[in-house]
Length: 341
Image (cartoon, rainbow, N blue to C red):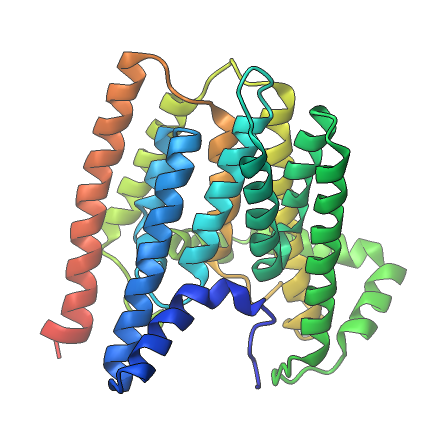
């Protein structure tokens, strides 16, 4: 299928269940789609509930989930929301397991391997998070789980390679991905230059920020200008509340390393698969690609809040932001696609 994404079908299990119910009951396409969307939302809610019981989220994690773009993905039938939920479960288990004083039963280890596999097989740029289970099982000297992690990571890599080989990317370019790789391997300075131009261009940076915060619909529904400013303030305040010095080096720097690497891989993937050559800028990178790295960085800032003052501040900041963001997102989408027609 042209321009299909090379994602593992298991990422779509909730949606498939909804569609199967609709088919079995001989419902229409519209009703079946709503069932798929509902099944996805229920699965996301269950995964987030479990994640937050394993490791309580800080204010920044909650504010990222309250961003208009994140909420729009969560309530859609795509696998974006599901992948975010699986990622949060994976990093919650990592933060739980990396602390030796915390209990980490076998079922958590199994769930960590499964969640990590589902994330990296549906979000190839997040492949570095395979280091999460590897680091925990190495720390806890669990060789069997370490071997299972390696097998899962290799299977995910095999799927990614197979998917890239069979997906028909109909975007017409003058060079193939292999030719582009060869070109930049012989001219690494050009590779650095195109990255530098893209990451310092004000237009691209503004586009990334606006899409990261939220441009719902078919990129034709920008939010009110106030939400982009409010989001910046909310995220900065939430980061300040969430930051803690009582975080181990591995718990701090491994998620940050994975986040930075994921961003780099996303840009590199778009450079060799989507951007025509010779390239001045890297095309195809979307602001929503930064949601997962932002979640990783949020978990790296601090652990579970034990201070009553910080816990109260977290509820006030994210609760207030969720109320405003939810109202503006709902009203914007309703007015654009229903009330304003």
